[in-house]
Image (cartoon, rainbow, N blue to C red; front, side, top):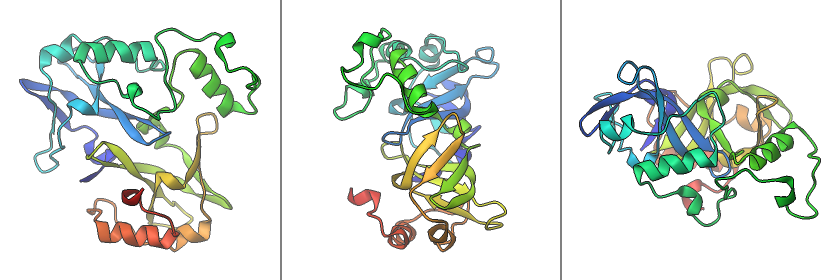
Length: 261
């Protein structure tokens, strides 16, 4: 089932023995568009601490009853490693989290672009012949992240929701939401609010059509033309996204759908 991140925002998370807080944000990997963590605001229960929960421990959200089930105990969450959300999430911190909860590390999977380590890398570890002077701020950020043991592809959904969106031939609006597939916790769509360009309209953009996300410029760049977006199938925020609509969307853009890739 597909859910808007905004639909999950603020919902209580219910552990096996009680509530542990509410959904505050999500971190996702923009290389493969997988949700890596739910950020949980523990409220007064743990004096305002924020903790990270892997989707491995999260059940199917129940929007009817307004709750997200979590296969953890309150004691497990209480004893989890402290994490400062104002600082980048290091691989060393991730390893402590995974050891504490007994989760299977996602960075052990084949084909992921960032292996990471518990120790920061030195410049000598950079592949011989690779450029040590990145061309722009995005590349500089990514290199700094790798050297510090931080995954440069890990993004805060809440932060990216403020970014502007550029097609190949001009602006189309800003990021309003993300649509997540509970099966595998993959981001299937970005919701674009077209603002004054197409007043009152929101459109769905597949991650497959995104060329770049720039932290420094706070922009999302698409491999699409404005005219393609203008004539895309209508999307009603809050409406269920079903397969017939998805087929129509991918046919419009003449792209292969994610379920066939």
